[in-house]
Length: 500
Image (tube, rainbow, N blue to C red; front, side, top):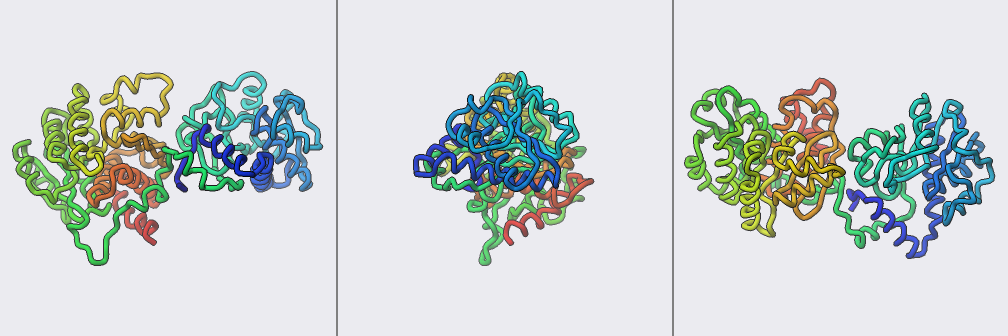
């Protein structure tokens, strides 16, 4: 489970299991401190280092790191929120082993240092920062000084990535064993800087007991389920994806999705277009095939060919009755469907009709595998799940999970921190991509890449996670100046990295 992300509670369980198995807690703390001290020496040059110690184990890590830095001959000053006498457990042991001066946090002046090590609060913080801690964080953020966070920047929720009042803006973060959701969910992700995961001697075996359900969307999650071409295979082994086109004046989105599906690995891709758009689409396609499809009756005829195993509906299609009819026909035939853009909006007044069709399609699939993948951005999500979007206090992870359970579908809630959630409670957070993805048409390309993985028989959750990750890596491979048309051309580089 290299891809696992642990909630603060799950990380606490990993610590307790390791201690129960015979590793003293103070030894875990000393190993954590060694990783922090090594990072601090890299970041600070030869300059003085301030360490801010909170009242819990993060504070203990800061004390232990201060002792290591001091013994290495570095100029360190430690500032505490709670005096040594107020600490307990391993934190008290670590503080007792530090023989340097400890000053009150109110005397901390960040401008005096080359580096500030933030050991105030870790991932388990559940209430807003206040008082001296908040004031010290604000001073550090306002100063031109590098900041290294222990575990997670103070003020960031490890579970949701939310800013709790105020939060440290770190240049780098050292965490332990596994990352937390708050490292990848915004705005926490933007506060962490470069993240290092340090090995402190917790065995991977503890994950078997913890059974985490949140993961990073990356090769460690999906590669074992991803289908790649076989030496003795042929194009029909890789599936046949269909992309529905809108009218003649808005065929571009469908063509982007179709090209992405072909580059993404589908063996065959066909665009189904209304008669009015056939000539326009034909002038732009080569390897992608084209069929006329004007209405639901004609679509049902086409669905008699069971080699057509996945469909993309929504990009540039229009959000009326036709979109609803087509989606229900595809799901009614037990086929897999990626529903995006106009396809999502078409169901804003009757989402239960979509969810019922998705549930029926899943019941007809082996193991109840979801047949529907929804790929909304925040606005489209609100149209389909208005009550969830309006509920205060829900993280993006919560929103996607609840939506997936309700819809009986895999939900891809897009953004810089795209979350992929399955009806069974599994969820993944994506960390690939660049700011250049915020341009017209990139969502259409994503729908096509996801469809390509589905066409090849990859399970829906892993197919969606793989598609999102590949989409982001394609953007990284191209670099600045990206437009949607560039993304499919970068997929060969992404596959070379996966298969190399």
